[in-house]
Image (cartoon, rainbow, N blue to C red; front, side, top):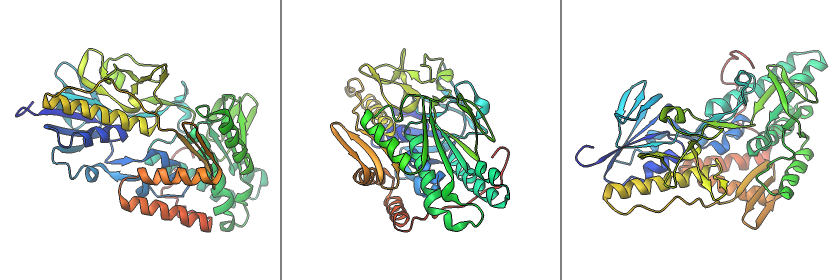
Length: 419
């Protein structure tokens, strides 16, 4: 503590980490935010970068720019190696940084359920790099198919498998079908992208289990109308660069996208903390590590209960946790009473299925179809950072809706390894 000001170190510049920093803008603290990347990414729209509807710049912003107007905050780009609990220091590749208060908001990554070797053949979708990699794989599959004379080989290359029937999987499958059937057919001569085969494989009994069954059934019908083959109750038992193996047999594919699960960052190991099966750190009612009131864990890194149910790993929950932790820290810094226990307020569930189709669940209100799609679009544009991005994304969606185009169909790097 220097000059009576608390040193607050925040690990992670995602939704939760930025909300903590913003909440401390007027508090008598010095904030250091550390992230291994220099940008904040709006993850709910990553699948649109992966399917060429948006560019990375539409949904990502430099963290330094986001916090440039906050005099008590500095941003460091570094990889965290661990935390020294006794000396209260964070270890990074760029040095050690002392803290009085530590906020761990390092998010989550893909979970392959003990088959990490599948990652190279079936990328997940958590970062800009993941999205551009998937876009490259999808577009390259069509390019390679155009070079072939054998119809069976072309058919295999233009088969795309999405594993996991949650919101990300549903959105990815619908968007792949959209780009194949609406944006690409005029671009090729030998291969017909409109005949591409898109499969969505879910091990559970239905898609979107967090939604009511009626909405889940609507999503499956909407995907089927778009030409997506939905396979529920089917487990994937193997993945390689040529496709997937399931209990029902082998599926050859030009690209496989993983949307079946997530696991938390290594924060639990850094802190020597108890955690759930997904690696999320178990925290107390005030989001602090039990026995360590100086350490907050928020966002997808934290295992938090909302009554009998876990708080979902969604952006609104991460933002609420960040805002709450920021208020608690600000109150401590001022010597004021701290807020009561964290209480999560569920703001609803949304998922887009494809062009002119989405499902929305807000309390008793349920929306589907075009109205749901409009509502989904307005909400996502609203939560983007900055007027420029809101206008750019809204214009891109309007243009794509009118022209059926995808303006970002760029293969931005040469193939490297699988895919």
